[in-house]
Image 1: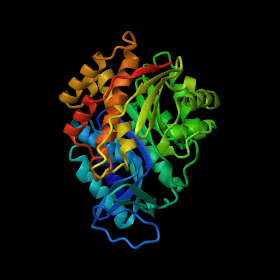
Image 2 (image 1 turned 90 degrees about the vertical axis):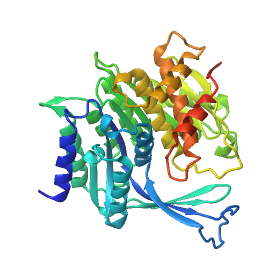
Image 3 (image 1 turned 30 degrees about the vertical axis):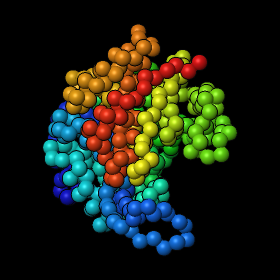
Image 4 (image 1 turned 60 degrees about the vertical axis):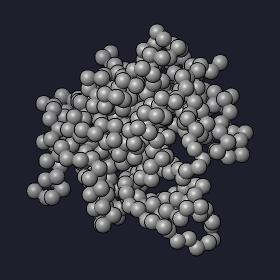
Length: 410
């Protein structure tokens, strides 16, 4: 048996009963992250020579970022093993990623059960951190070969069935882009294999979106379906998908409410998303976020706590922390007995949820409003840490305590 097969056999043996009580994070386009940190008060000037004060190495890629945040929210790995479906390249960069993941995820989990090492080299993403902004340089990914995709699908099939009967994960998070060699149907195929009647799904990707939405829609056709699906998307990205022109000159200026409403309506129609999604969680940087209840197209505004401009912020991976925090809180509120979220987090979530004065008879909507608000707090907290998607418990709790209650948009 090869080293790779031995690793998979070990991981498989640690997931007793398949994945029915596990979280699967699909982030196929993994990366090795470098942070090139400029001296204080130094801004990045194109065409100039810059000397770094420090150079740091870490994990990159949206799926890895989600796993990092979940690891901080779920500190006891054995109580909630999560599997990270990803392709990790060969060479020193890939070896470094595997070592960093092992250190981050801790012992006792099975995070690597769905990780496939590839023949192509590991890509590197480089963040250049200046005093006023962070610039990201992203290398292209290597091509995924057919046998590598077959290996991933085979692993998922092995974990997604018990005695020949298909089962589904407790939660699924689909993140980011796909490396070359993956078809547009890949995320849809993975979703079909991983999710079940009770799976809570958060999607933070627009790649292969129609196939993915079709897969989610098919799952909802079951009479025993009790799961849920949320599309987390940036407001400007939503406008581009929907063909709505923004009046603002840049994304930094935010999206107007009427533009957002038009984009939601157009998107739901163009992508036939109403049969696939329960909610849309729309972020807009430092501007207020919005939640859409797809069933009746109602729109809710969630304020975002402003961060101090006196400190250097590290926004790379913040959106991924929003996705992770939203999923973790949603799972906790929908099924606390299955959730390993720390008790303190659970307490503040319940308190915040019960403080809501809108839609008090709609428990499902209140759950996702509280979960999204918590996710936004995780995203803000990650901006205070240099490493991608790392969060500090006290900072999350402080930011969440300052989150204003959501309001309905007329």
